[in-house]
Length: 324
Ligand code: SIN
Ligand code: MN
Image (cartoon, rainbow, N blue to C red):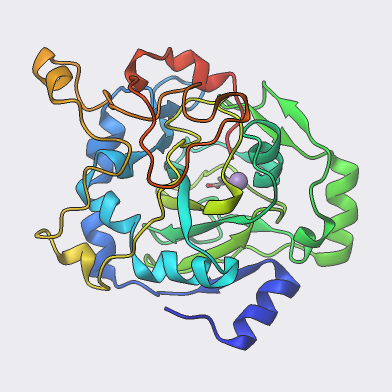
């Protein structure tokens, strides 16, 4: 899928693009049916709300779920980002945000690039989010709030909020948010399942809690230009990936094509021996923390990092670092 000149201009101005109902209801059904299986697993990649039970977000499902691996290589999601960045992209982060009915908590005002830069050593905001609505997003179930044009402010100083939610986040102060809203206002893109958003790494955004009886599942691909790969390996590998292999798009009908095998995701090959030992699919053979990208050393595209196991990391570690 290619962006038109008009869409590229709009993106430069507003910092986001919205494509209502870009995917069909049937395509979203395939993904929605997979979500409970992922959230039901108590594994380190699934972060819970403060109650310790409600799923807040799940990282890296594209490394162990076939349908999400296919979504992660969907041309309607990947190609516009490649086009905008003008080079191949790799998956920096992949998350399924639950925003569950009644219990889904707030995401405070923030920029993703703040975390990508501070925690991951990403050199420039040459990465962006592509989000897809698995459920309908309406005014009641915690839609994303964007401040149009706020990406033009660049990286804004942020504070590490460790207490508001179960998940630490680099957040912006109220005065700065007030100033930016004074200039750009707030929008909350809403639409049916299958609607897609692309937004700049410096766009200021957040979302309110979900008081409604409707879940609001949104999947985010954070795609980064390969030349702009991260230089630090501070966060767990399932949050900030160390594998810089370009994402190769599949065919447009890939969500229905169970014959297409998108797994193993490069760099996350399942360790068959660990599986036999009963360690489960958490056991990755590559891309462990602190190895591929430590001390500014960079793994080149396509190069598998040395052996390591994500499952051996303490889930609490994931809570000590910011998400975005
Ligand atoms: C949300 O899903 O509501 C926001 C998540 C994020 O900004 O990372
Ligand atoms: Mn964010």
